[in-house]
Image 1 (cartoon, rainbow, N blue to C red):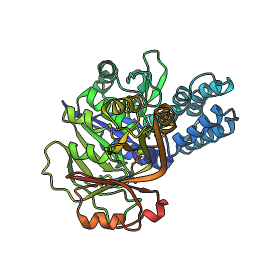
Image 2 (tube, helix red, strand yellow; image 1 turned 30 degrees about the vertical axis):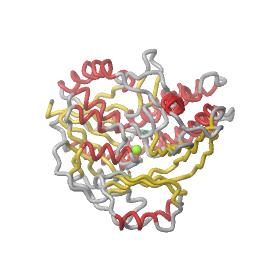
Image 3 (cartoon, rainbow, N blue to C red; image 1 turned 45 degrees about the vertical axis):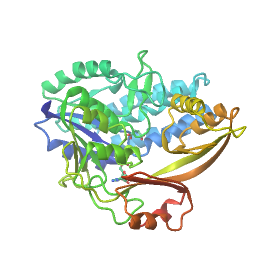
Image 4 (cartoon, rainbow, N blue to C red; image 1 turned 120 degrees about the horizontal axis):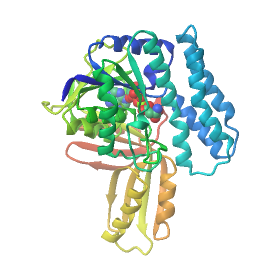
Length: 432
Ligand code: ADP
Ligand code: ASP
Ligand code: MG
């Protein structure tokens, strides 16, 4: 392990405008002596806006106006950061040109492929701006294209990392830069296939990218800078009375994020745990704060921790002839679930029915039901929320459940889960 090497990750909110980028520089400047790999996401809501471009283009509608808005947003930030932004704007423009070429052609590839080629640009733009700003402020920095580092399989929108090759590439490319005293700035979220087509690692995947680099370089620490003081006992957007967790185990962090705690991408923890690299979640708003430390050696005595996973679908499946749901049925169903990379968050089965609560993302649920409806009766209920409460007690459960219609629930020794009809976000605000 190289104790002096840290990986930093700054998300969209930390680079949402010129003032935020200045703050990122200030934070980085306090780590001048360390070897740093700085992973940056797309600015503010750029990824969502690029998704709009993809939707327009793939549905045969003109997407240039939407793209122009994204371009102007980035040009404006460049103009706010630099007295003479022309050079940077020219390089940003070159990045846009590639999408413009694609948009001019009729759509011939799959949606997922097109998505990755377009949406990945958000990170290429943000890192160019941040790297140029760092250099202009005398921080010796090198911009590196993460697609030269992270090799994935060919599953667009959800590329799986090919670890050996990624480790080789990352070490070979980054270690000499770090050894020469320069900081590395690279993108989160993106990688490439063996044929050099761009892939993405799944929405919110920049935390995961940072963990990949930390793993490959045997970093001493990964620091993820967030807009919250650390990992809290619940999402502060939804709950009033949350408290900060000072120190949690990898195991607890994996469980929390698996069940939807959006503060860290769920794939982030495992590579760190494998190499015992500590994760420090810190606030970019209050960088002096102690944040939350995630390591292996923790005295485990946690308060109740609540996660709410939105956009859930409950799929009820039964055999058409009322025969038992047998092992070969399950095997068939799970083969489809695995092929579509659907995340199952809760499941229950009785003699003749099988119920799963899954993330309702992209068009996966529709594709799944289409695949199985010849053999099974299927009904789908959408727009649901899944509550997962770790270290629960009865008073929390009853306060969370009050006024809600419970559609499914599951109790395990440490985790209680239930599925309800989705409430509007503002109605969700409650203490526990
Ligand atoms: P990034 O800028 O890195 O993409 P995110 O917005 O994805 O950051 O993650 C930070 C957000 O995660 C917080 O603003 C908060 O609303 C949400 N969040 C959800 N669960 C938790 C939790 N348990 N602790 C802290 N924040 C949480
Ligand atoms: N920009 C990507 C997203 O918004 C990745 C990330 O922010 O982690 O999903
Ligand atoms: Mg995020």
